[in-house]
Image (cartoon, rainbow, N blue to C red; front, side, top):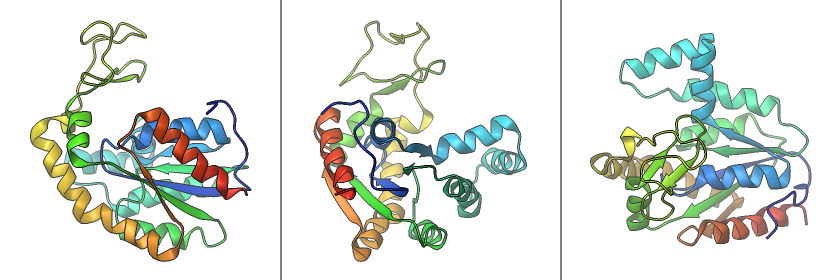
Length: 225
């Protein structure tokens, strides 16, 4: 499928991308946003931006992280609500939110008149482990690689800008299983939440990223039909 502009999605709406850590949500969200004229909204990136800008919310989030605690649903909810208010012509793609049923319920409470569609990228856990353990990123330009599936031309060096590649602390093997455990206990119930409301769609995320993208595009394109 052409990765250029595809079509509008039938008016402003919110697409929730679900899936396990390492399931490719961020990659797919960016491509979909560009193709369908939507805004990619990564709650993690937005929180980091609040910290960089030293806003009141950013100071609260920074203090929470430095104390070793998880950012509260309330703080993340504030970020999401700001984005919903600025929905734009075609809407937004939420990447990394909601992470639990309480967040899904909050989203529903602020989007009563806005269509919300959930797309789950389902991936086998064995595949996730290789994706996460092999992931490397460039702190300068943001390029992401995988030493198993898409390595850089020069080991440990970004192809784009020549910066040394880094590994996220939570991509280490000893951390991955804990992340998956949290996902099973807290985030997978969100799938049942959306399935019960009939706005749930699932794609097989075990395939090549381009194939997964095409499958998601078919789902998103059907919204406007």
